[in-house]
Amino acid sequence: MNAAHSSDPTKGGPSIHMTFAARLRAYFFAGVLVTAPIGITFFVAWTFIEVVDGWVMSLLPAAYRLDLPLPGAGLLLLVVILIAIGAFAAGVLGRLMVRAGENLLQRVPVVRNIYGALKQIIETILAQQSSAFRQVVLVEYPRRNMWAIAFITGVTEGEVQNLTESETINVFLPTTPNPTSGFLLFVPKEDLIVMDMTVEEGIKMVISGGIVTPPDRRAEEVRKMPLVTGGTDVPEVSKRRKVAPKAEKGSAPIRIEESEPPHPARTDREEA
Image (cartoon, rainbow, N blue to C red):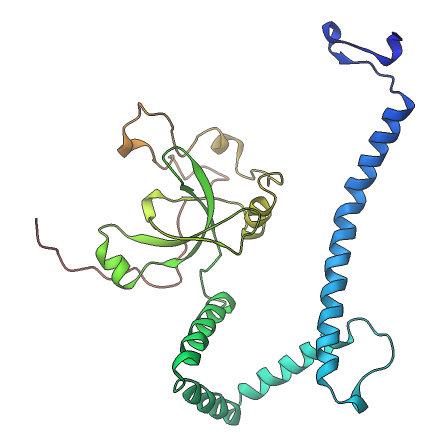
């Protein structure tokens, strides 16, 4: 066997020389690695533009349709129309018309439920002061000593909070690779580990199944101090402790941002 093309396990791995076929294979995978993300992104964006263009142009009268091949003209027109509608709705006449339309929808039994739910979801996502999907957290799921990435959607209120003894947080636990589906969990605030990664980085990690891992931007001394300890021999009460001190340079206190004031104190329960 030719020594130039073989590997010696006793001397630290494969030889320096590569066969012509191995080089072609390496170049092929390198080309796929470079072109695949660009090609898929371009394909998705182009498909989206074509779908929006076709939908918007089909709504226009035939006399006003553009015959010139202008990709993105329909998308640009849709943006302009939405801006015009928003400007009209912000006026006095627009507010009156929107209010009258909502009152009309509230009288239809099935439509009012769908409209109310969709409006509340969209307002929550688009609200600038909302804390929905603004923080990435770690939660113990589906069992002890197993962790999953989740996103804070708000502070628990109403009957769910009044039935629980500790202050709980609304947490959305997405599934992989489709983050649009998942589970709504009500987790005690002290059981959440708030992460420094952005929501975009957390979503990328969920979609990729852990292949895309964002870097840890915390200070070097903070990285060496874990926030949780594992093992069945550790008492359950002391498994989740925040690491001190937090006044060190480069470290930030772990907290959950809240856009609303703290939940009011609940009345004392009857003792069992």
